[in-house]
Amino acid sequence: MRTQVGIIGAGPAGLLLGRMLQRMGIDAVVLEARSRDYVEGRIRAGLLEQGSVDTLTEEGVAGRLHREGLAHDGLELRFEGENHRIELTALTQKRVTIYGQQEVVKDLIAQRITDGLPLLFDVSDTAVHDIAGKPRITFTHGGVAQELHCDIIAGCDGFHGICRPAIPAEKMAIFDRIYPFAWLGILAEARPASHELIYARHEDGFALATMRSETLTRMYVQCAPDEDLAAWSDRRIWDALHARLARAGLPSQVNEGPIIQKGVTAMRSFVAEPMRYGRLFLAGDAAHIVPPTGAKGMNLAIADVRILARALDDFFHGRGERLMDDYSRICLDRIWKVQRFSWWMTQMLHRYDADDGFEQRVQTAELRYVCGSEAARTTLAENYVGLPYAV
Ligand code: FAS
Ligand code: PHB
Image (cartoon, rainbow, N blue to C red; front, top):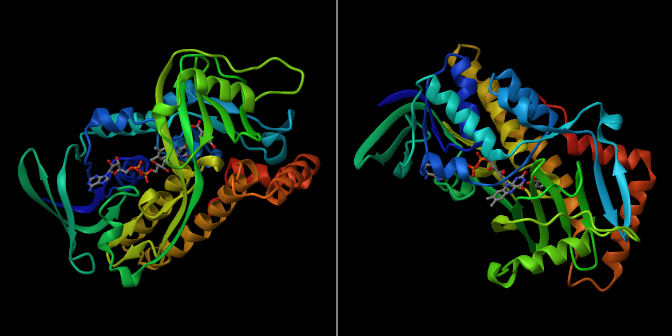
């Protein structure tokens, strides 16, 4: 097999890159280890920055997003029983939209299949070769060993993929922070606690009330990093949510209902530099991980592939390799700003067990400052709705 760009991974990064290249007249093959049902059923991110919505709209894959997505103009910070609204749109003239990552993935897969473009599920034994020269991808599909010759390989295979490890360790710098807690997330058939997101800091730990629709609520509670899901009965989860999201003197807003999905998400900040080696380019979680407190993971993947697609457009259409050479630097500028914001939201809102009281007081002071200062609220808002794109 031969193509211009071999894309490994059919998550948001790989699928959106494939769509962008298609519209630029560049051939690509997308290889995915899992089944279509699996990738379309994976519950992950839920919030899209304004830029991500605009990008998906430009790429002609946002029809359902505009019909079913929930646009938000604000979010709520809750601590010490007080509620403080951050007026995102009034401060930035931008909105955020709730639309599950799996819905984005479904829309991109449907578009690629409708267009009859190569997207292979259930591939195995994927390996990259000669990434500094004439790249090849070998893999097994349908029990048959295959070889894909390409000019460029896009490593969109997530944190546990094979592309990042294919870059010689001595050529990479790794930056890694593992937080001393995780999130236990639930999906429940119940009305959301509020029409906007609620980020709550509580002495028992962090909680987040978000949603997927008017009748499907998505909620998270801080838990131990090695939490045993079996230790959290439905009752215990609901009790923790009622307690951590409580407003002084007011009834709980949390609506209970059948929990249809539970999972524990580790909290980590990770960056691999650079994001390119020869003809291999990393994008999305293959290169970086952010704690979900800032709602940035999927949005950062979209920002990466916007730059990669434009770089490959220049390369394949005779406009040179300058953007390819600048790819990593441009991506990393945004990535580290987003890492900072995600780390800042995480350290401001979570309980640190090792704390002797100092961090807890600094957290309270920070939250009070943010809620009391329009400049500070604007800073939070402009990072949350999404920083301007460099390209
Ligand atoms: P992805 O991991 O989505 O996609 C990579 C794809 O590559 C996968 O489909 C995988 O099967 C495939 N692959 C891997 N190895 C392969 C191989 N060898 N050959 C072929 N294919 C291979 N972000 C938020 O903003 N908010 C959240 O609440 C949130 N929750 C999350 C919960 C979990 C459990 C996880 C793991 C992540 C969460 N994230 C969240 C982050 C998440 O949304 C990522 O940022 C997003 O999926 C990044 O997209 P991709 O880079 O495309 O990687
Ligand atoms: C979600 O809706 O899953 C979500 C929203 C905001 C976050 C994290 C997760 O910060």
